[in-house]
Length: 475
Image (cartoon, rainbow, N blue to C red; front, side, top):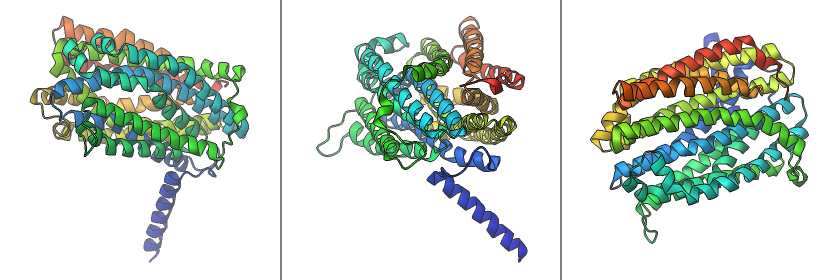
């Protein structure tokens, strides 16, 4: 009888915690409550949020992978996503700055300063994206060719690239506002905005790509239109909750007046954060170009297919590791350094378990997963090899993500920037080039360089984490 009561009590606690995580419980104090519960409350919506972000590319990949000239379409989607990683880098950098500052202010129990900081970050986003959008629309075809696409493939897909880069503000705001909510401890709103955006994308993709009734078939362009509309609706949902005044953050119109002191403080944190991810993104762009030039259109399409699938699995792990950023930021703000450290270890443990499970899934079922996204046998062969090779380093990826988010959540964005510079530009790129070109391994050499470099980056992160500079950063 007692055992039955205990089981019911345990199930009740798990159900209640899950309900709190999905609903968004802003009453929970992340600076004093159970660390395990804190990680779970943040991680569940953050994992689901990142899963939804990765679904955007997979949905596009699925539908365009069954179009005529699918290798051109897949390559265009993949290369465009590679270029968009620069925009993602800007968005993530700004998001990290917003999360770090908002979390620190919330930890200090100053919600007004947190709200003001979030709004200043949005002002910066508008200024940056006005330039990027114009550039993307004007030079879309040249960008694809520069990335290694054939002229024929670029001609076929540049309209897709124009729309995707031209709508960069939606991408930026989706990341940035979610970063503001995460810093405030409300990861559920961030999750829901991505769910709404993806549901809209999933509904619109087949309609706009293949046509329905009076709606014409836009083909590849339809995928870009569907994704942009979905993200735009997600941003509108975020803005509604941001201005509703029901959460910790109370927004006033006056907060949108430029505060150059606050903007300078945000840029100081965001700049190395942006650089950190630009370094990584440029490395991935170089690898994509190296695969395209050594493996041709089919090699490039196979690599991009494997990369999109890998990101689908890695982004949820990134979401889980985001819990470390919020917990570290808020606990440092509350002067709870030991608690911040315990939060990092707990998050890392969960992420290792998750990534080890994903590694097994991709190694065993990789071929079946790839077959779902393309019917081109040459593309399948390359994609299977790429996915098997890259998945070997998943456990190290998981640890590395937690460490990066620990540094960034503390406002120590220079440390991971330095790690990325040496790990990607001075190690991964030269290694990939030597293996692919000098040893004539082609795309296989690139695939091998990825887990080797990521493992080295993680080991460097562990050493620097133990030195403890991140504990002493002021934001």
